[in-house]
Length: 397
Image (cartoon, rainbow, N blue to C red):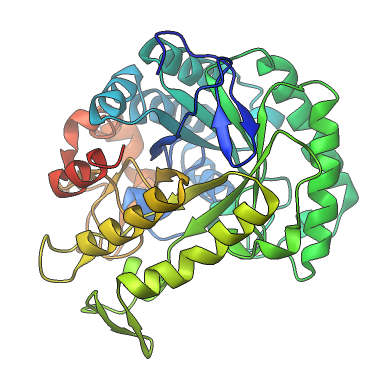
């Protein structure tokens, strides 16, 4: 990479800089920072806005404001971007909740992460992880179990307005590799998503003709074919790779890779068969593929085969020339869902792995008394690097 970042653009299947040099985006997700997720704090998974409502009921609005500010200022700092650069990555994906812009009206965190990435000469991808009304029915879109985004036009108008504001603010910012405009959409009719993306691209291009727009496949980033060939020349397609999910998320404990999972033999050949169709579409349409998320729940360095699974997946990404960001950079160590390169191992009262109340729900009653200790525990200095994962990823960065 050149000493100074330049605006990236799409050329066929490649992403190139202003000098025409190929750039391969390879990095990590800053999951759980600007879009809180329960499991990342070793808690139950439910919507961020529900957590904040309950926190406010116990502590009041002022304490919620103090809590949110402390969390955002400690969970990710400039030192984390330095660590990511040191790992060998050249990109950070930044998931954020639309409420950060729509209601908090606080640009400081996006401004800061861009500034920090610029300083360390790595790119960032801005990922709208939660849209107004929620684009799927899952907690990670800040949903209460409904996906109202697809049912109410006013919510989509809010969405377009948000992206126009973001694009207007960062249209000349070379540190931003592009905009991941909607995370893990789930739509019954994929043509609905295709038409929506056409509109989204059109709205962003009113104010920003510079940046790559990343469009995610339907059904949590898996169903790509119905999107068809992009109509905009500066678009890349994005997929998420978590299959077989009962293994990668550890939903069924003691599964091994390679081995039979859900009645199918999963090995390097099956990984290839899963990923190759995306490459074939990329070749046909001449469009880059960006794997926005993939990862594993880590149990053991040898016994269950998580590292071998990661290696086989990364081998395919390299073979096909895919761009990628690992999910996720940091998280509390737990038995379910993809965890972090950096893992929080201690068990203070606000984690309380033994229960009955676990993780972030303990903040309701403990924040006022232990806010200093809790805030300090969010810093990555309190986390432990999983060197098995970091060293493996470093071979592919």
